[in-house]
Length: 95
Image (cartoon, rainbow, N blue to C red; front, side, top):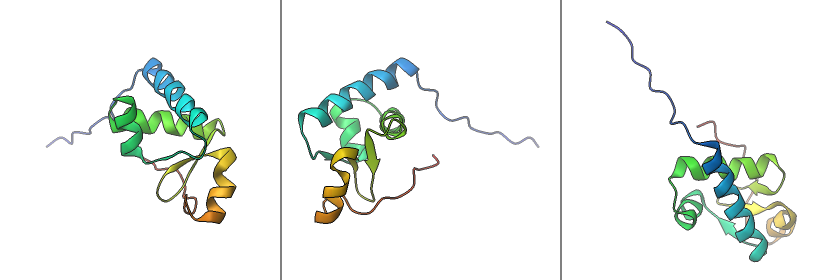
């Protein structure tokens, strides 16, 4: 009996770069914007996996921060924390 392992879906780097650029423009255009993973995916017209990869890329760049409920502009993060809009920070997902 053999074991079959599922590989994670492969995402084209260009797709992630394009979605990251689109999300960056949205956050710059709307200061204080907080998006959930599902909202970001719908906004960009992509699946959750591509959206997560793009959001995590923006976190690695220091542009976004992830909270319990949403992805927040890192420059607005401290103010959002004090007002309770963004919640407390949680570590990145391992999925």
